[in-house]
Length: 324
Image 1 (cartoon, helix red, strand yellow):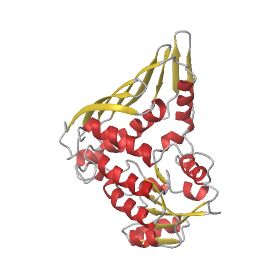
Image 2: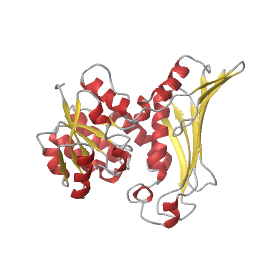
Image 3: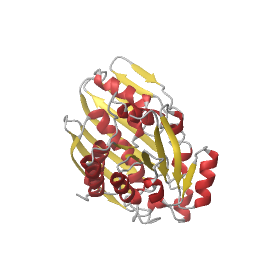
Image 4: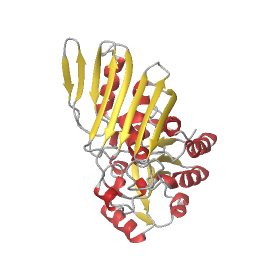
């Protein structure tokens, strides 16, 4: 690894303001040197506020720039495939925001392009790097609930003001995110569950649009089977009367309860005790994800979220949606 890896960001929108962008400057050995946004004035504004040297409104110029060693793709998912293939062709390190791409087939093409060039490829499923969820993993690996039997997840919420207004939102545009908020949110949970419980060997589901507020699906249920024999099921509904985010992992000797997106305590329940663990998220929330990229590039440890694991998550999602 070079003394300093210089990063560029394609798509410096909301997710890069607080969650991810600052981490690329905070991690020792990484430097954020260029950003791109289609609106040049907005790119300039971002660069000025975050002390970034260069800004572009042309992604190709950033990708081909000699000052950039690695590229973080943070655009809406419909353009991930296009940009990722260009980054692979340029021979540069890449991190892609989740979901990796809108379909398994597109993800497979991305994964193959980087594998063929032996280039590092990461996917921003940063929950795999958070202390909160690594505590859950430790509790499972130390058999705190015995042998795991099944996992369930309910994720529901009321329609947002933008949903009701019918103003444009790419997250609910079926051309960009066919399953709407499922693509954006369920991907985090399903990826996390494979991290905690191992790969999934089969999955099924049903989905539809119940509210007709936008073109994407808004109600989906799914079931799956992990290689380990753990059974999983979930319901995702974005037209409910209240917000719910509840995961329950049940074992032969107890259960673990936690949320994917909230910072509620992790609750361990057995026949003899109930114990809570409160673990706050770091700021910025992707800091450990970015640190783990550096560790892999230095040869110290494999990153928990790579193109291979992101590809598997895409396969699970497409199986639930009935696309494959």
